[in-house]
Image (cartoon, rainbow, N blue to C red; front, side, top):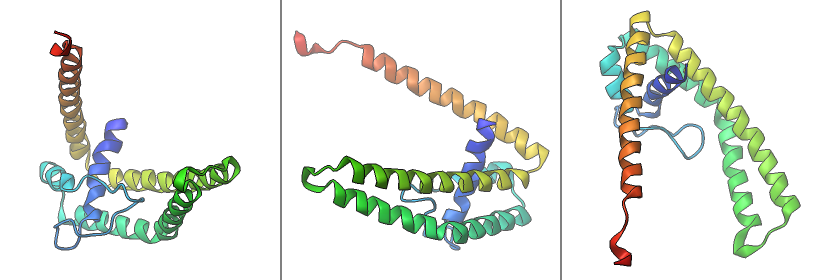
Length: 162
């Protein structure tokens, strides 16, 4: 299930690109955006049909319109939080109120994001879903290898005490 969400999130990135396919579209769900270019590789591997690509585009356009006010509210809240804590000032009640409001906005955006992922997963064929599962396992293995490599490097003693 987690892989399905990860893989669909890659598909989700297609709508982040402009019509020219060069990644000039608006970001979605705040300033984080999504991995650009990931969809192109995923789409090529999954061999999405033109109809599937069009469905992805429609899903994303609908979601973008639906979340526009939430994304703007999130932006305003981040600015309020910055102003409330500028120059070391801190009023716990103010910061807590802003954080609570931001949490509600974030929750709504998360629900919509996962709804979109689910809708996109539904447009895939059984073969594409199976292929995504295989790609997930490969990605997990690559991540595990990188993590092990990093951990081994961190365990090596430094020569600074010599």
